[in-house]
Image 1 (cartoon, rainbow, N blue to C red):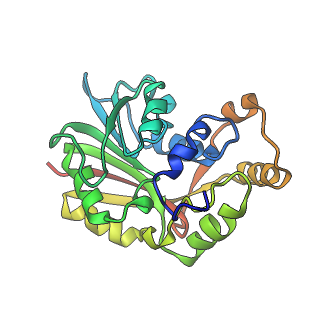
Image 2 (image 1 turned 180 degrees about the vertical axis):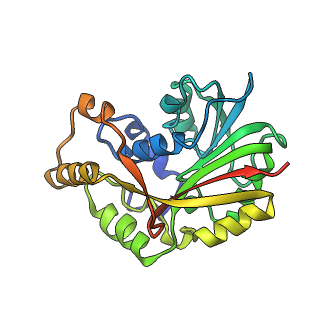
Length: 245
């Protein structure tokens, strides 16, 4: 992928077989999706809709089973949407800054590992809040615009054999205060907290990266909580907020 610029969406077509490969390039995204799902309560009404912006291969889907939502996934990449559809997600091809959805259609909006890839942050936040109904829930996670995030996610992380090179453009990383302010403009009071891998999971992941080993599928998918909340938002953080009515 060296011929593609950092953050080029075409990388996800190249990596299409990685979405659900155990111990593949997107392994840690599975962990983060599980942590994001813990912020989402069961649906409060029949027919509730969850709009998953930047859904990728549908990694949130397994963690929504039994919660009662119609899971609508929006993504730019058709190959990723095909993967998501195979997991029960209703696929919609679209740009996060111009969602092809009506106002207030969603009970929950998820924007996971998305905002650090979007050149127009105000437009993406505005669209996420627009499609959210009053009283609806916004959940998200993204990378902070800090030296620590750049060092860990790009300079170190992308040198590991299981992490795609050039998947991030650190110029697009997002400060929490900026994100909180953008959400407030659209009536969503966002609370943020840090997120990090558990120590056991991180050591296991790093060892496998160093040894270039692939963990057995059984061990990967039956693992417990891989990510844990933390006081520090210096690298990765979550956000949760309710839209005022």
